[in-house]
Image 1 (cartoon, rainbow, N blue to C red):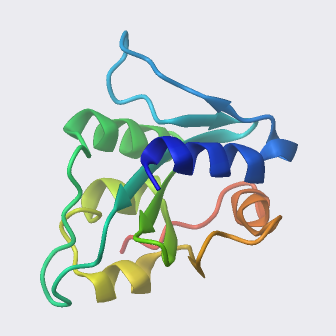
Image 2 (cartoon, helix red, strand yellow; image 1 turned 90 degrees about the horizontal axis):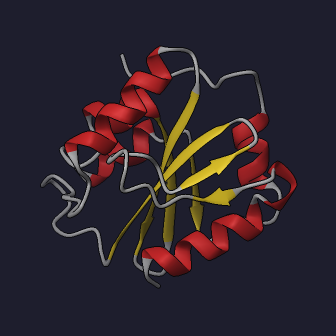
Length: 141
């Protein structure tokens, strides 16, 4: 599955939140999906790699990190959804996504994710995670 395929799945899962795919060359770093209450950056990697080494994300730019951090710090909804191979999906808040995703090992990513799923998130669960409260509490300590 490519990030484009992942985007198609996410748009379907978020249908009740009026999602829109975003391609914005005028403002680099703008996340891939805008929905009624916020933004989601989508990232996909083929596999986890060696368990104790950082999970590297190609194409996760400094501008994308900054967008997520700034929006989260301003009180907005900004998340990163990571898909690993054909098995794992992990959701991170903007603060953690900025500071740790791409630098942390698999165990730390699992520990600090807001939610994890095997395969794709079941219908309604991603929506529930994104709307469970006015703003999910950051796990970045």
